[in-house]
Length: 68
Image (cartoon, rainbow, N blue to C red; front, top):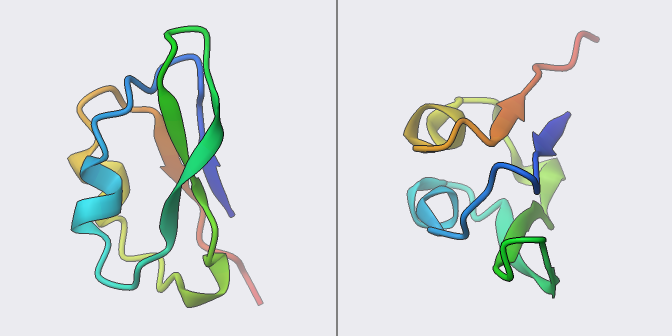
């Protein structure tokens, strides 16, 4: 599960750029900071590597590895 906290996100797009599996896309809705927040548009591609979570300067992303 991938959670992007729209209250913390400033729309820097680092998560979109760093994701090796193209999991993220920009939302068409703006948050209260008037920025387009990324969302997991291709979560099925996610390998839960955590690069997005580690690279987020605002700690706005949480990646929880699914237990099967």
